[in-house]
Image 1 (tube, rainbow, N blue to C red):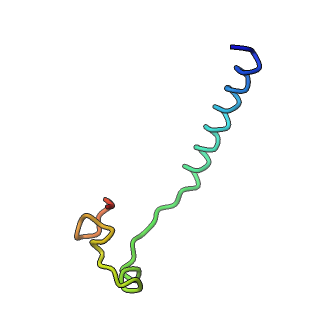
Image 2 (cartoon, rainbow, N blue to C red; image 1 turned 60 degrees about the vertical axis):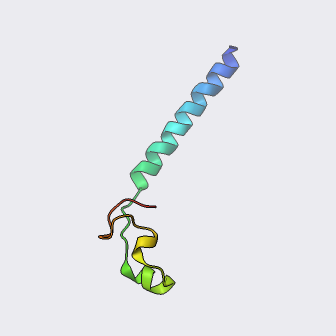
Length: 58
């Protein structure tokens, strides 16, 4: 591999890692609200596998 390509590949890895760490650090928890189901007219089970709400999605 040519040195220019190696340097470019290293640059891409660093940028990808920096982006991943930034997105991970900026992530905030989300909360399911029953108002969404009421507003859309869908049952909670449309999205949730567990009847109790649970974290697993369809």
